[in-house]
Length: 331
Image 1 (cartoon, one colour):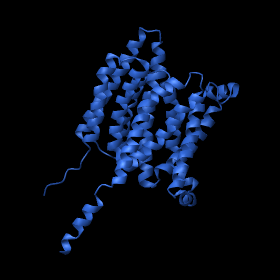
Image 2 (tube, one colour; image 1 turned 90 degrees about the horizontal axis):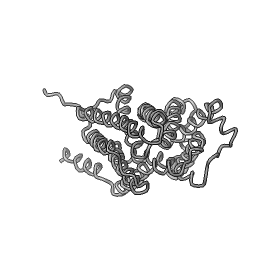
Image 3 (cartoon, one colour; image 1 turned 45 degrees about the vertical axis):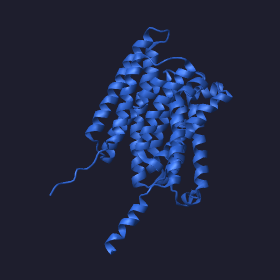
Image 4 (cartoon, helix red, strand yellow; image 1 turned 45 degrees about the horizontal axis):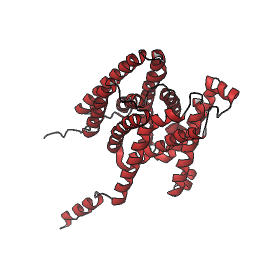
């Protein structure tokens, strides 16, 4: 009888929590809508006159406020404040914060020069770079199916990049502008996202930082880096000449706040459900982007998008469905 006692206790501990399951679905739904609508809303409500640095800095401030409110709500703010050290913060969050600050600036540039669906699909290449840097930094291996899925994703990204450039060449838009201010920035941002995600995972495992605390630290450090670089950048000159909120309207706050809330939701979905559910969110968000672009812009996806979209959806689904498993040695 003594040998059978651990079994019931184990089954109870692994049973799903109804409250946690409800939170997972709620946060997943919100993140799907945010992720899918963000490119379209940013392009619609952010004019070309808006200075990129001003929107990024405002977004980071809103992230800090949201994270501090959530930390205070769960009662861990005072404890974290007492245990916090500057060295520990810089070690865990310094480099990822600087990388994310640059990434956000590149994404803001790309938003304005690509259609919403193209941006969302190219942005999925960050999954490949995340897997690459995760292996380099954490030695986390990929299954055969995952490697195949990543190659599918690369094919879709190349197809979409070439197709987007050629299809825009016959229109009034400058194809070089589409390439260098739309496609290139989002692909570079994907590389940076993969590196920063791997560094954040390392900080979470080694330094035991919570997602809210890392959000606060990275937002503050990233903002400092961005302000330092803005002193000699074109954005810094534009802010000094025209003011911080040049080109802003009340509607400009919508994509900025939405982007900040999305950053919080990513941490919540990951903490409650892990990477598998986040993968399904990304797939659903691609479909949301395509639907919203058709409904609000009246523009159906291009033939290149129609070919690349199933490749992207299939690759991400396979990657999340077939994780790497260590084979047991047979005696």
